[in-house]
Image 1 (cartoon, rainbow, N blue to C red):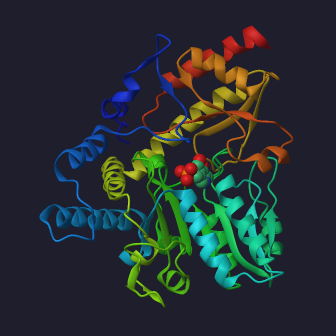
Image 2 (image 1 turned 180 degrees about the vertical axis):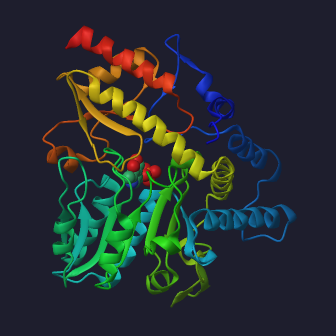
Length: 407
Ligand code: PLP
């Protein structure tokens, strides 16, 4: 096996060279947002400096050129996620915006009183609240798939919950708190046996493993640009054409229309029907650059390297006295949630920060999951391919200091 060139890759991320409180930065908060390689930063700068013009609207050269780059970005994303058609790729503001769009449009069209929406216990608030709102509007009910103590979906319970009233399943591909990789392909197959569509929240999966929409056969898939080494304020809603055709637009405005009169408006074709207003075209082009960058490194190589980091960190954390881990599924990404020796996660995080180690503490936008484990919060270290084994050692030293000081 080829050695993963992590030191060379780190050169692409200038921010990683920083010192925090005089210590070299260890950035373990990649689940919240990822850092950007130079070529993404430079692409965005170059457009602002040299080529900025609004897309899809004007006859001038720069606008035409920008439109071309924007539509090329769509093609790059289509190829990256293995979607069948370019019309199935919709640019949104992020994963949250994508889920809200589906929850609203699908809810208004297909949810009736007494219907059920099925989600899991480990969903991010972004894949809970939009469905709750839709259920409240339509008189439908939110049903929740339970999980095991290790943080895996209870598949028998899932099978039993899929019923005549289930209208849609919305489930995360990878848990942002536990790291669990859910068996989404099997979950989709089971739902489809009953003609139930499935939305997969890919916000924590797409940057760690290769995905293919045709193979997965999901009906909707969502993710955010800023978690795949691209800019903030941009994301993707993938939807099968047959669903997107049936759903009404979520927002009205420029670009999404065909003809407008005061009496009636007809809508543009896909994907533009769901892209109201001036799109974040520079964000879209920046995200495509990020996706091109990680594709060049190779999703398989990234996956293998990150699996090595995961195993190394898991071994050390499991052996650390007094440390309770949440999320011990065999199939998981390098996300670690833990509580150390009854020390409040916030205190652990504050001390680690003083050592230059950036983690996240709290509920990670998964309060119902915290209730499931009867805890108030955790420390979360979320790793990615520019992290190193030495940085994991730094984390362990930091945890030892926390223990010496507070436990
Ligand atoms: N879903 C999951 C699993 C997430 O981890 C996040 C963000 O942390 C989101 C959805 C929401 O992403 P965004 O805030 O970029 O819209």
